[in-house]
Length: 282
Image (cartoon, rainbow, N blue to C red; front, side, top):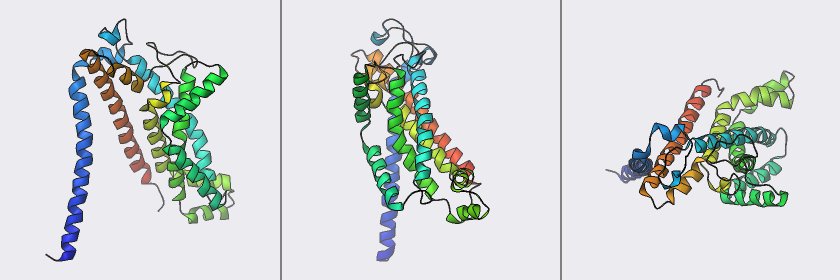
């Protein structure tokens, strides 16, 4: 075997090994969480709110945390979308000088890298200054701040891949920059836009640090933006710190439910991207 073939074989083996490590890590997390949480996975857990003594082994479930996570995740994703799609579109060379756009992209990447706990603390400081208490609204704002850089950069990369020839064709036909962006660019970048939305939603619904100081915690389902709200990540945190093995089993069960939601989001993202990619002009 020649040296060139040996090098190719070695790289191939390394790539397979890396793939195996990633897949084993994912399977390992699922197995450990399911193994430890299976005894607590019941219908009551996903259909009922906690009752008295839930955190020391009493009855009830985590419906309040599931609903709270969906409330905050969906609302934050909608708000982040309306802000991100405008910023991502404005960053294109049709609207702004490339140097200025690159500076903004650098800032967005820095925001993306900021730990989520920093967003939570920042919102908490603002809440204290305004005299606000923990609430569903504060949690939504914290998650919106967390999701904006993720969604914006993903959309920006997708929009940047739209061929210039398509935009020039629209300009020749009399479309202005806004019409071209909405009717041509957004449609061509739709798979990437959807991926950005779902990626940010998955990050938001699975984050605990940003809402730990802002959303608060409650055993009931919030009925207004001013009410405190539980979420799956914070529920897992509180349950996992219990000295009771039965309660810690519930933490694993809640983690499995959260993991299932995130995996479903990832699968939906892949399916939607594949579906809409068929209509993209290369």
